[in-house]
Amino acid sequence: MTKWLVTGAGGQVGSQVIELLGEDEVVALGRTDLDITDALEVRRAIDTHRPDVVVNAAAYTAVDAAEEDELAAAAVNHLGPENLARALAHAETGRLLHVSTDYVFAGDASEPYEVDAPVAPTGAYGRTKLSGEEAVLSAMSARVCVVRTAWVYGGPGPNFVDTMLRLEKERETVDVVADQVGSPTYARDLAAALIELGRRDPLPTSLLHYVNGGQASWFELARETFRLAGADPERVRPTDTASFPRPAKRPAWSVLSTSSWVAAGLTPPRPWQEALADAIAAR
Image (cartoon, rainbow, N blue to C red):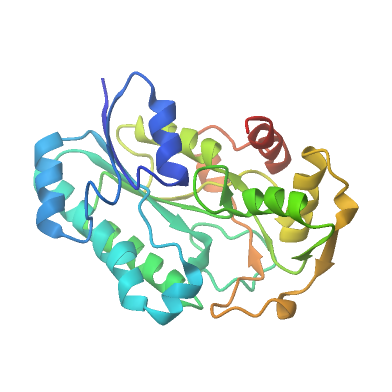
């Protein structure tokens, strides 16, 4: 039986990994259970539990707040993953799956980003996540895989789809930006993908992308959310990024290619529309 350790256990992805694992032995650690920024605490956790697979789903995801306090973001997004990787390297056992983000890219492309596309984060959140990627890959030359994803929804905590479902009940119309395009990803699908990857020994590669298939703007995602919830999608109106100024710049293009995922012999992601329908039906 594979022994798993999941950090960020209370978040969107971590909670879904734990739920899906079922009969496997899981050590679920939320932020109050394990401070991944504390190297000694992390070392003790790894030495105590001796996991076969660590899924690091812990992250500082407050994109705008990161602009005001990059050190706090870096502690969780860079130092935390590095501590996990170093502890596993010291233990000389266990595989690490580290969840990262589309924000490591500049967001100015016109084709889906491949895993080897040049990275150029434009804000604090992206910089700290990229530093985390580099740290784990440096600390562990093998037994590690960074999995970038984007636009995750469907788990506990704030996410775009839940916000749209709430606003559908509160407002007659909702304005949503139509000039940001990305890869909507159902947290449960991502969790299942991480589990499939984690059961590979050895891991097929050190860097992969996983998102649901296809692409959409936030406006298109909002309209489809309304439609699937039985509401009139015409109540969602298009607007542009300039209408919603935020401290952190949002990527105009966040579409990730999953060609490397499929090339590794892993299950191809299903279309985002199908995943979204299941997510809303499961509510």
